[in-house]
Image (cartoon, rainbow, N blue to C red):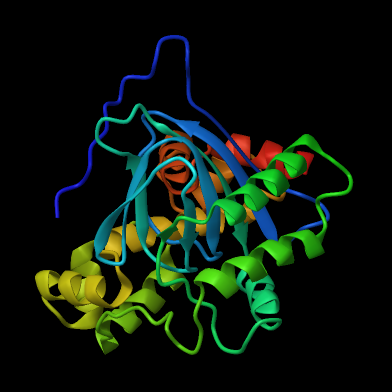
Length: 285
């Protein structure tokens, strides 16, 4: 399937902005408020669920084997560890949205009030005006620092409503892709050696497969080719280190990036903000 490409010229006088943060009273969730024109997310997966609302413009993203389009007012419901992309839809001058990234434990707590099993959202884009209003009100109040809003009970109420109206459970979250012993082996190998410059030839040698065969079975099992999975592991490791005091250049080196510029470029393609912006927001939160 061909990708949807946007008109990447921002309107006169407008520019991209993005703020990703974590509230001190809600350590299990991150917030993102962003306006994008040229941003193009690399295929990636979040360890958390991704739940939000399009405020303006139109976003297009590839998810679970299909292209989806989210217009203003649409609610986005993405499952944890599902590969997806993200960019402006064809003909749209970017998009503006507000996203919540609650971890699996928090979502499971909300699911425990309405049923049993693993939370799974079968549709990534839904039309639910009431849920959209609730998400936007909570998100805007949290961004403004309103003291009465950033409470876990308010967030759990939103998650419970999303699950009750649009969720399922009981193993539906399993990715419908083939598994393969070689893919598991290489995933573990990359996890243990992500700081090194791993070539496909080296990985193929470890798996005792041809590079072509390894690339095919790994992508079928994981949803990404090996080099994209390596990139994702590095970004996740770097994200964890950003809560500390290491210099950005040292984090780039310690997580296997060529240099700080390389680190910044890939981090933004995965999380929508630069490492410096992410660190400042986390410290402020």
